[in-house]
Length: 204
Image (cartoon, rainbow, N blue to C red; front, side):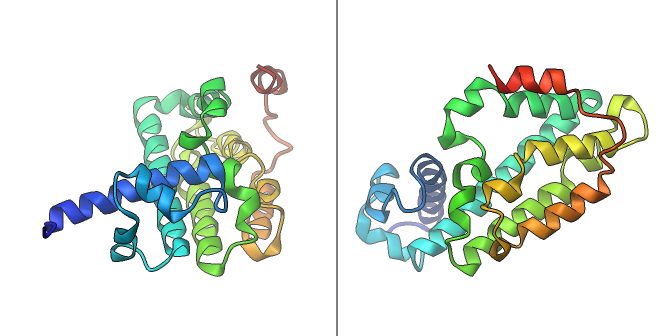
């Protein structure tokens, strides 16, 4: 039975969604193509009609997850402009987010694995971090309703969970040097982070 273009596109998106969830839960090496296709309700044989390889799937699934995360943050910025940074931090440090890795932070779940992947996958992560640093809430949200974006940029940097560490601090990912430059630009000596609130959230 021939599958329509619409059904083929829907199947592809379902594979990407399932892969994004299972990769975050089990790691890149902890789940195989057969189980991903089974989770998507499709046969193993149909995989190569959508993707050239597992690495191809990893790159596309991770890019899709990061795009969804950026869109989610953009919605928070639009809906809660004055306190968007605080809302994002609260959501990121919540027990719900912590206990559901399959729908949680891609960098926290898979960052340590990235340095061992090929260039296409490392490139996806590097571009994702850059996009979130340059186009994340710190660009639009003003701390306390004022004109100074620096406190919000520090919050954005922190929310990434020190991606240099989660990505193994490996130069091959291209993330370490970029994030170091961003931190220097943040001028962290001004408008200090509310440490008491941070410690409270982290120890829940």
